[in-house]
Length: 196
View 1 (tube, rainbow, N blue to C red):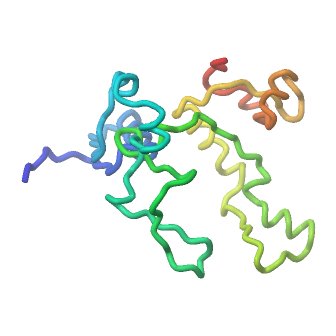
View 2: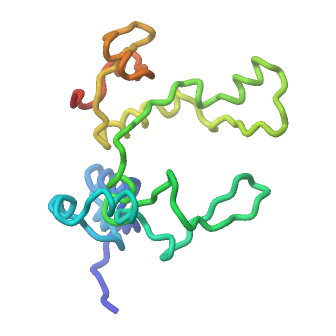
View 3: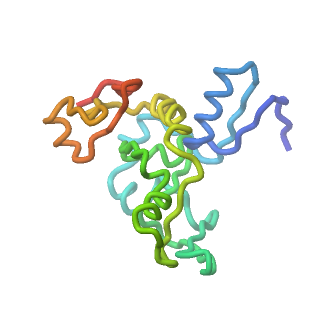
């Protein structure tokens, strides 16, 4: 067994969470950070020369193989966990970047009401059906907004707000987006300009 040099922080997994945490720790502290990733580190040329839509869409070449590590699923807390043998919309990635490597690039910004949906429904209707699977998130928009803003900057979300506090900024863009990003006076633009 090979012994590696001691460091302050070891992060296991080089996906979205691991890489962003490593970046934050390495750039905001004096800690020495190492990220361990069992999957391959791919170069840009690997995609053009070595992959096509069959590899990606059918053979799931960028995805974690369910044969290597079982991921389970259950429809409710009462159900027994069952293994996922074939991926549908949930496609965990493998390699540096994890699922971010095949991310479709859509970064919806949740509305403040999403975080307190149960409380909102209780206030409006008084009582809810017992089998209704709805809950508040345990925190509200004001508590997470700065973290969300920082995350959007870190992952490179680009675009232009179509709606700032109810004022339509660009009607054409707002219609094209269908659900426009709604921002406040503090954050009236996203970190990067629109790419299209």
